[in-house]
Image 1: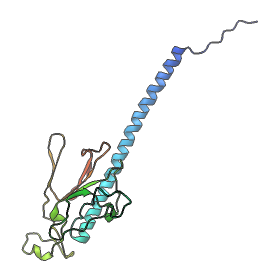
Image 2 (image 1 turned 180 degrees about the vertical axis):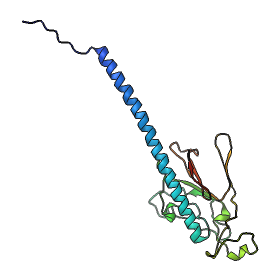
Image 3 (image 1 turned 30 degrees about the horizontal axis):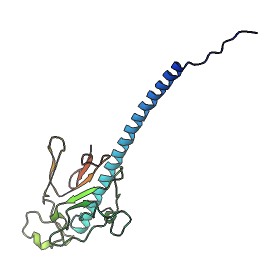
Image 4 (image 1 turned 120 degrees about the horizontal axis):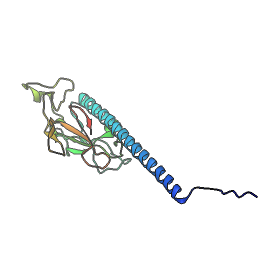
Amino acid sequence: MSNRRCRGFTLVEMAIVLLIMGLLLGGGLTVLSAQIEQQRINDTQRQLEQAREALIGFALANGRLPCPASATIPAGVALAGQEPTPVLAAGCANAAGVLPWATLGVSETDAWGRRFTYRVTPQFARTIPQAAFTGATCPPPAPPALAAFALCSQGDMTIVSTSGGATLSANVPAVLVSHGRNGGLQHGWCPIAGWCRCR
């Protein structure tokens, strides 16, 4: 009989191998998580741009921007995502709410499943007769016969940075916000008259 010794891995060797595998998997998951987050940012950027285009199309067809939809109506319930009827002279009953996604035919939520916040300057959401711009330096074009604003009209909102308070955009007629992963105001915004930005 031969005296052969069978040698296997010791517990220390197994622990080292498991530690190395854990580090490799952890690093891979971190990279994957960063890629998923970047994809969500890119998707939300596209959604912001689509919503901006829908808002501009609505303004061209109706001579005004839509009023914000109610944030308290759950999805799937009557009037969810619908623009409330604007008050002709005053504009919207509420200047802030959520994007009227059903009215515009766009996505209800961003890539994190959060509704877009939407705010409009009241004068941009009212319907007034074209004659109200008689003598104005830049009257709105006709049609539409009823227009709330002209190309030279200025909004009443200023967008500032949450870090440092620097002005990012001024005299904005409307703004659309994605609240991002954490639900804060820091993730993305889109001045309707300008350009969209996710950061």
